[in-house]
Image (cartoon, rainbow, N blue to C red; front, side, top):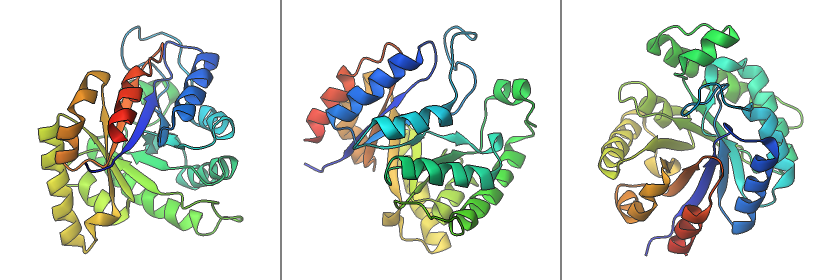
Length: 252
């Protein structure tokens, strides 16, 4: 059986900071390969006015309270932070975690975040152009920071847009994240391989990750067949980790 990596995304909504801390420590103790939050300012489902917490301050705490798992935001919204500052924040959290940070990035999509926090929402096209510019700025800043990142600080790009996003993955990313079902993931994965060929990138240099809902855990073999190498279970409060345990058992 082909081995694969297992991660968990904890949703920072309708919960407390103490519950989040308990959950990421428990998941790290289980031996997950990766721990993630999302980067939003308001809940994405359920009560739109439920409790919610900011990702990067939580990630700094996660970095010092865990020991094994890689960690990051799945994914950081590019428009919420100056790219030079984001590179510095990522480098600093990387040191707090002793080299376990992953910089997940996406173009952004949740209009309420932009509108209530005073960011320009623009269009899908303008947000993608901004992401492309930021990827280059971040790479440059990471190369100039002193001290540099302690670990490899890989860049993950999330999204499945066929004309722009997958090209950006092929050109700039160390990892790619998308969603199921397996048939859709397989098609997007094949298109990413095509983009790699177009831009002269070895497709094996890009880790393929997929975010799955707890009911999809039992489809893990189909996701592997579709090309996924790293399965990330999305979990909301009260953070039931049983699906993660089942996936870890399957991963061996």
